[in-house]
Image (tube, rainbow, N blue to C red; front, side, top):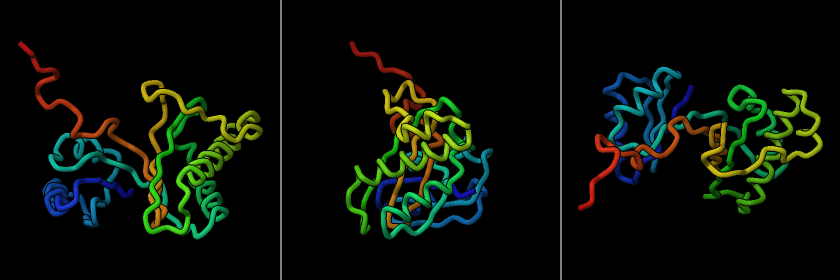
Length: 179
């Protein structure tokens, strides 16, 4: 499984060194992110030991999507039922950088529609097939599934494995006293 760790620009080499020290293989640095090969047992190790990475994401799949139909078919082929339970909800967040598909809201709707159709077929849920957007977008605290992040032009689909960003969590002090 490919794990992706987003980071601030310029910190890619530091994050890559931290990952290499943890013994993970296939470490590749790009602009603003570092990829490595690992398993489910490596996700907690990365969450605890990374100092410069923002979060840990699992890559669900990658495919070329020059048009909306290719995007729909590619998302439909991903194994969403392996990560999202029958009653699960998940947000879809996307970016359009150097892509022919420039409308982020349209791409988000297509991704959600394809994922809902795949989940409806997998779970035998007629409601999901009829109302292709049966997966609701509610408050972040009530979401039971992982967030899905879509990043063109590589059209990689990643799923959050850390919850909130590592940088946003308190380290050592859960709160600070104000006098």
